[in-house]
Image (cartoon, rainbow over all chains, first blue to last red):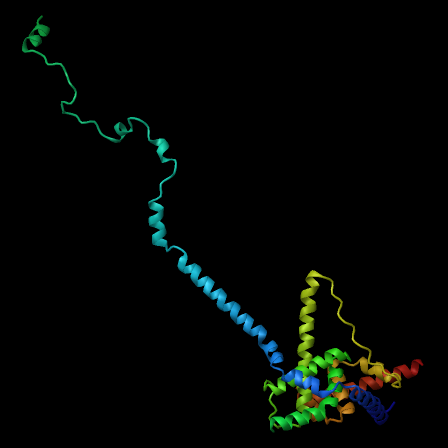
Length: 125
Length: 165
């Protein structure tokens, strides 16, 4: 098949098919009115709007969770004030003796009073 | 061009637009209707703006072609994602064959997409190569190359078929 013959055949076959397609085309009005409907436009933008709302909600949630979480200094103070719940088990009787130093030089202990003659009697050879 | 003029012109070009949409959508009628409706929506709400530098037919055909390409890309992405969870079978392209075409429809079906597009535009819709280049969004030189290769390939395929038959 030479070039003009090929072109003629192509024009004939594709032209016939195009005319058949054009006869088979759906009416213009429903397509056009569907495209003009506000719903069609809204559907086109619906995804973008939904994504925007989702981003805004996520932003608010993240901001609120950050403001509610304790700051580091406050957390340190709270950690220092913490006491273990088993502390009362370590409180035993006479525990205050271990925590305090003995008081030397005071006469808190009641010693028996010695008479002056007793000393001489004891050291007499 | 006023909105009413645009509407009237679109209505006049509607059958040709549908035929071109069918060619862009592998002869899938449902998909062609969706593509055409989306194209009208783009034009009517101003996302695709006609600046008058070309004929309205060329502009409409370019919008249809771009919209069909978007649909095709979306389908490919969906197929890729679905393939991870479920075996997906892509829809088979409709046959190019039509009664009375002989071996020509099969030969045209073997062309690369751009070659097929330029053959459709030039021989089916009577556009010049320059107008077809504008529709396809390629340079005039590139369109000429596609056109030339398409004709050479068609001639080769048809001559091979003649020899075998």
